[in-house]
Each structure stands twice: as structure tokens, then as C-alpha cells.
Image 1 (cartoon, rainbow, N blue to C red):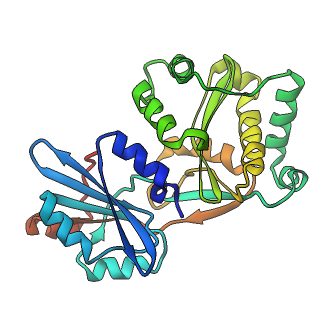
Image 2 (cartoon, helix red, strand yellow):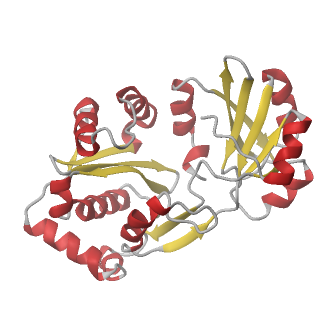
Length: 287
């Protein structure tokens, strides 16, 4: 199960103003998220479902006057069915289309041995400088440090968004902080831990704090019983974003197996827009 199909993530979106619907197909649950818009009716998104509720989608489109349905498949078996039901490839995903899964059932020693030299070096150098990684409960302070780390150049989630995330995930959300150096948010769901968000101050990069933050997150996830550490996105040649190359190199240095998801699919209620989607892989960013 992907984190976006977890009860905790459903709570988070519900707290954030989304309508959450759940259906069951052969005892497999699927969560559907609906966002009402002031003018266009609503949008529907279904992310990483184990099953696609094709019978329910038209009912929800009609009930909530949805002008678009967006699905990001979990497996390669789903795209042919999506095409059969009138969905078309979209130009860009909203979720990372490629990621890395690190096997946490291995011993810490084996995980370390599987890392690249720069990751092991970064962890060792951070330890030598006696950097402390703390689990932080003061979300307001965490947010302040994050904003300070990137200034106005980069987007930072709002304080309210982080507070709602913590409220929804409770003990399954780890806010880890290397004071005045950097931080990361780890979400756990099912048997996996997700490297959800991260930031590093300039001084933190000099001291290799980002490597120690990931290593401590991996160890904590193991202690919590997680079997997979999902790095939540790396550079994907199918949807090239050059800005992803740097942090993708960083994530790959910890080892693990690359996982590639099927491309996203989209379907408009308006026949003309849906025709454009078919011939040009038209996509709109609406959230």
C-alpha cells in the first residue's frame, strides 16, 4: 500500500479541505479524493490505488460535477484498463514517477555496506562533528528553521499544512531536526517509511548533516518495524526535470532498488478537452 492510500493520508487531505471517498473491490480498498472548486465544479484524483474503481468514477463525476479525473497507477497492469475506459496519458505526474526502495530487513551493517562511498563518508564526518539528530514536536519551530534554510527562493509548506500533517499521522510522522543545520519529515504507513520532505542549511551542507539525517531516519524506521524506506522520488528521464538531478544523486548514494511507476492518466468530462488530452497528452496543473 502506498502512503497516499493510507488512512492517515486520507485524514490529512480531509483536514485540508478534500472530500474523501472509499470503495471496496473484492476486499481491496481504494481511496478517492475530491476537491470542490469555486467555478469549475470539482476535481478527482486517485493516487497509487491497488485497484481502480471504474464503476464508481462516473457516479462521483456526476455527483460532484467533476471536470477532470486524474489517476496515477500503481502497477503496469492498470494502464491498459485505463485506456479502455477513456483515460489518456498526461504530460506530467503530481507524484514522483520514479523512486528508490531501500530494504530495511537487512542489518544496519549491510545497509551501510551497500551505500556509495560519499554517503558513508558523509555519515562519518557528521558523526565526528558530534551533530545531534532530535525528534522534534515543536512544529512551529521546525517550520521556522525550514523557512530560514531556503529563504524566499524555494517553496516551503505552510505552518498550517505541517500541523495538519502531524495531526493526521500522529506518531507515524517523524519530524527530525539537526538544530540549525537541517531537518526531514518521515511518514510511515503500512510496512514502509517515506522520505517525505527535507531541507538543509548552508552550514548543514558543510557539515554533511543531510547524510546523518537520512541515516538516523533509516534506523528509526527499522526500529518502528518498517521493511521499506522509500526515498520519495528521483529524476525520471520520461519526465525530465533538471533540478532533480542533484538530490537524485544524493538519494542514490544510499543504495537500494530503483522503482518506476506507470505514467499518469487523465480524463476530462468535456468531450472536447478529452479529445485534446488524447491527441496531445494535454495536462493541467490544478492543485
